[in-house]
Length: 578
Image (cartoon, rainbow, N blue to C red; front, side, top):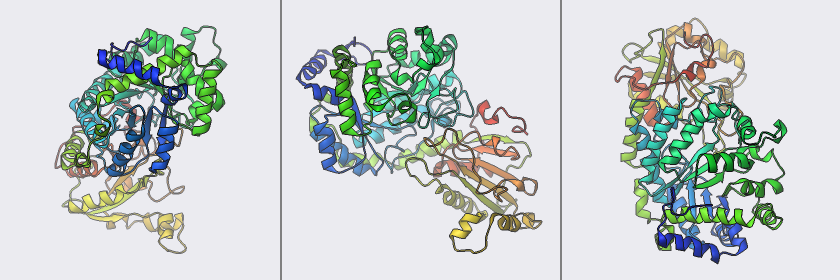
């Protein structure tokens, strides 16, 4: 049973009374509605009238937009809610990801790639200030997965590192930073990603550690963060066969379910053994890692019955609401389980003071938006980039490259596909060109066959581009080559690698034998698996102007590399260290 006065809620008598009175005032349908967090796919007020009014959802998360649009949307939603809403955002990198004009401070990996642990706190502080300014009160962060498997790309930039120690230290710092803005956190993704190489957005993945190894790693992380006061935990669509069988020895392999549907992981492990008293929510319910496990009509109530308190996102509001209500009426969700879940939802709201805040003050005024993307926050991002841009290797001694020694630069851009947000992944190339030209380099941007054909050039094919590019005049035309790679694809592929424009493409670093070549990654840390021939590798962590500017400065030798890296960069493969 939930203890409203204990960690992480710490409710006083007045707050406890509000929780209990509010619970008793809700109809059955309103209690069912509280279990849902809706993904608001429209900013139309009529849409909100339906979601917040008719379904009485407990929380919302919105799609991306500019901060003013988001703030207006949240303000209207709160004005229509019978019970104040939990308003979630994904501030994993600062304000970016929560608003189109938010500040990209750093990735989790960047925040774990320097001895200064306060980087993570600064990232949390900016995240809290910018999301609170819009009216958000719930962060789906920090990420406390451990990046053990270099092939895992869903958390390769979203994990603080590959050891429990760095994850624990930096997650606490992030939590403390964002907590300054009266924001509660949902750390993720229990029971822990980073063992399997696959992505739960497209397939169920598995944490295959045995009970004792899990306790020494992920278990340590969760125990320490629970003790530190984290208020909620997001459950991944991640199965844990050995853990499940530890608590249910009779289970067969066919019985193993993702943690979102596994009572032995939620109740026996998380609630009982780890002592977590806070709120448990599912990861997004449209992810194939969940939907491949059961029929939709079964998995919706099964998640709550298994021990989750909130269900993340309707697939179809009418259907999912009906499935949940039918699950209660059929006894899949017991009265005790429903009451316990709603108590925790209301307690989380009360812990934020939502019950005692006038409805018209739940969202700040428009003037609060001045903090979003502010000069102060971009200065923080620049300071962090200066610390965390990392030299992985320079075995050929190519650095520094300066306009005086290597004036003519051949610039290559390696882009991945746009991720599910639709963000153009190629905008970094103009920023890179701009920063190199500001430094005094003469920059020549390479275009592949598809790009040249798109610009109207006729009779251009990959082999004609190679013939133009790869000849004995290359070293006469260019003094050095610099490659910037922004390869994403998060939530769309089971793993992410470089995809060249064609076989034997002219942008593949054949030219390392002709001129000094520098490869700069703006995302994935595992590119040496695809470009082991590169002798100079830099990890700049993010496609932000601050990160690119810091990389260009360090390429010239104008500031030192102080960032660090872990062994994942070598991809456990011969030749990557050469």
